Image (tube, rainbow, N blue to C red; front, side, top):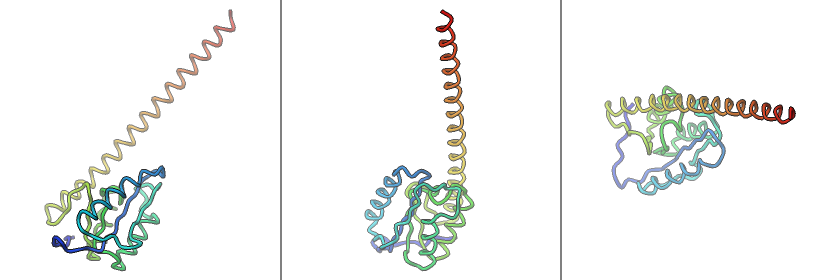
Length: 173
């Protein structure tokens, strides 16, 4: 899975993919940074090659924007795909590898703004490790959210007990 080397000043037909698990509009920050990187690199965003999935979990492999990007890649509609980080493609490292392999096999360069770009075997190993760290990060985030929810529930229960006790004490008097 070897990436093509792109010469400086060689303008590439460009696409991007962005994803967030929530649909609260924060996907825009990814898109702005990606568009800025495309411009900085001197590349041109192709018409209809801005793919995104807002409100889709990264665990799900089949998403509308991702599916459209994969089809466009197979049809050679672009030469390089920009993403914010590998976790935007998928939260599962083996899905990331499948998707990156599809791109590279179609002759498409893959550029992550936050991750190592692999252009040699050692870079590929580091890129794979980053995919694993994305998975670890997701697991830790899930554990923190669950802990926070449990804590809030316990606080609510304590407050309810206190309110009941206060109410009972007020009725006795």
